[in-house]
Length: 132
Image (cartoon, rainbow, N blue to C red; front, top):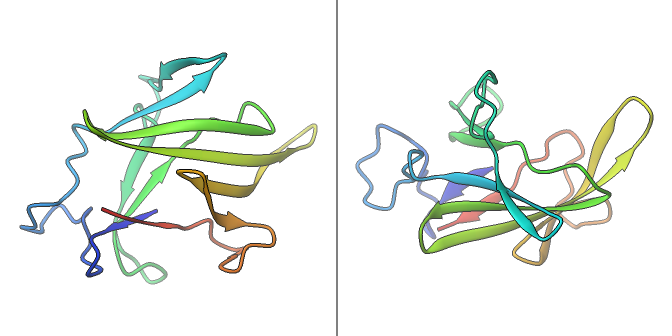
């Protein structure tokens, strides 16, 4: 996902002097499992806290926050906690086969923002923008 302010400024750029920049040290990803919030942490993973920052490249003109949301169920809920008082709810719908799990829909705070039949569907990139 891109994270921008209302003017389109990249709030993930670690070199930016913007006061609204995201502090990744405060960011927490939690999963809602059996009505309990479980903090994502896998110490031996490339993304131990469930997210990673990707720099701009030929395909993307801003930094990207790649998250690993809960995909346990056909519809799963994850919480992206930016700080103690700022939380976004991410709900994903998946189709599962014996060998794969494919995301087919994403809701942000109860509003569909990506997926099959959505007006902004981008089948090649599951990319959304969050405005902070």
